[in-house]
Length: 283
Image (cartoon, rainbow, N blue to C red):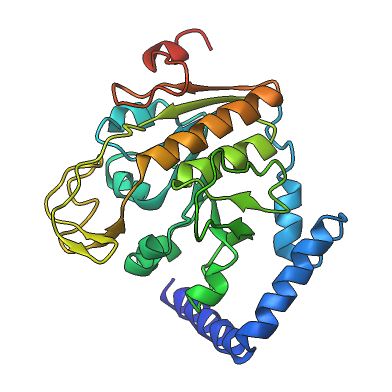
């Protein structure tokens, strides 16, 4: 076991070293070429082929997209063992208390990865999604990962934001990783999406560093140690998130699907509400 881990670690660092020998400008041009070719259904790399293989893989099935709000319960995760689930960020803090694991996992926030790199990189047993820009920003590979082209909004946030129907082309940002998960689910052919643990309510810390927030003791998540004191995060901008959720609702309706809010309480009212417990009685 120790030897296997050593060999994996050795390969990881060799691959990082070789990758970083290539100038950033060359990497960016190659990535642009890759994604331009995917529009023509030409896939150069294993990564693009992995994304393509997800097309309609869960057609006709339902899924649960899991937020990390205070309303999320461990016993609720236990009910999802036989469901298709998509989760994000520090959901792994729940793993010590449950056998449940997500089917798919995603992080889109650079700071989440930078501040928790080892924890995230060591996750295994499910598909992990990250923006392709991470290869140049984080200057390291993430193991067992699938990368997608991620379009950020550097200046004005559009309302409504665009929705990526074809994730082999790109996924659009929506101020929340949940928006990316909805786009992934839609691409996989899922037309009935249930959101849970999405409280849509944040207590903001008083301490700031420019535009960044510095965590103190605010309780915005399901785990008391979710965000350590002094950890940096960004303003969640709930108005932008709401616009993204409305765009997702419209997109799923266009596909003949629907998004439901199965969160216990919370303040998200974009999607019709359903009782979480009733979803398992006669399904």
